[in-house]
Image 1 (cartoon, rainbow, N blue to C red):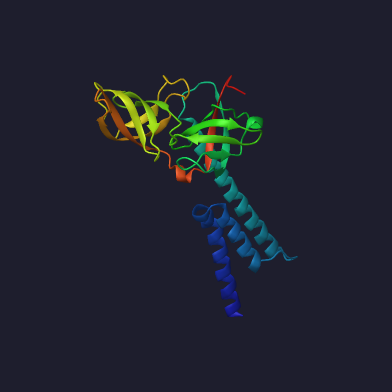
Image 2: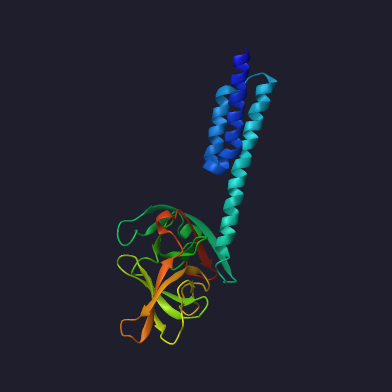
Length: 247
């Protein structure tokens, strides 16, 4: 009898630890694991004690899901703070897959024309600029990342105010070109989108200046830029929908 009581105590502690600590360590899956683990040792029955335990487990699981939703809400607010556009809405898109092709492939997301996403819409994460929508179907869209040689972005450095055009090599290395030779950019400066390109909203984080060198003709500067977004780990983007944008 004593061994059975001790086993029940340990099983209870394991279930509670998984339900409380699981969401922070494993996400919602940790709470679900705790719920299922508890269900093995405390199955629903006609007894009041086990019914109460099942209710407690269910409440803990729901609280874990609410905490995850709150964390995502905070993440989306952080994403929106990157843009200074006064009239803008946003659509959250999940990356379905990456197409074969240029650097890291284009991103195909689960939002399209029926969700208000149109070609030319800009995509960001909480880390910074991802790329631009190039085509939209009814329920999916293709996003070309800034690591593609096809994408050019008008940029400005945060401290020196150096202007230039961000381009990518075939290997995916980012370079801010055509920077005025009289400017004084320095390594460590943040690179932001500028208002002069007319495509990207002003003030979105693009990356960090890693190195300053002379341009090809020696009449300008070229800045090596480390992107702020880890494109290998992008699984969700925020699509910025400008008021009056193309539909």
